[in-house]
Image (cartoon, rainbow, N blue to C red; front, side):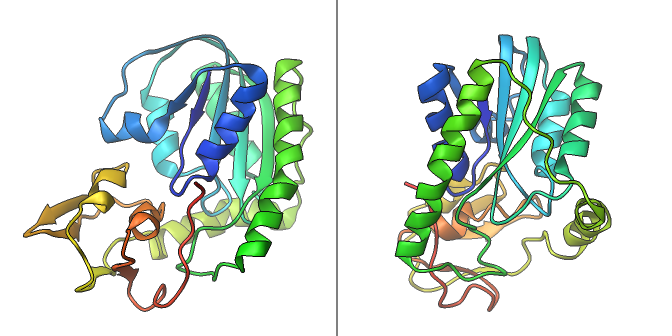
Length: 247
């Protein structure tokens, strides 16, 4: 079984590409979380988590969901993490999570994909985005073959920088930046409600035909990126920036 979490499509793309090789069932963690579904999942064998990198670790909301969910007969577990550049020392925390869940940890692999975090970065031009995905494809395929062969992933880099970014910087990033207080909607909004539909945490409600944000946000960028008229911004940080979604 392949379980993925995805804000703007990278995780779904990777999960489906892996499944094309492994013939595994693909399940959306987004849907599970949106429905507050932590019911037992029958795995009966290998389990692959395809997750984004948030501040050099898997998203905290996903970690919490994994801890609260029972995975029946899950044995070998791999983590595949998409990132804009690097995953830091995320493998350490993934291994600890597996120990808590009594999983057999088979390693963590990183796949560099286009970065959707436009709160801090600007998207490259379309040609560059395509090049990034094309470069990632053989990496994804190789990862899938390793899973089929029941092999452990090679250990990722683990230096002082990686440990610092996945440790103190991760904590600082969440406390300082992962908020929803600056989301705003312009007069371009057509009231379609897609932002609320796409939010995995049900953090967006439609009031008088316009979205309003609560405080349960993981900054997955789905609301900004899937707005069909680009009516949503985060303060001034995303103004004028191109949106990204993998379709």
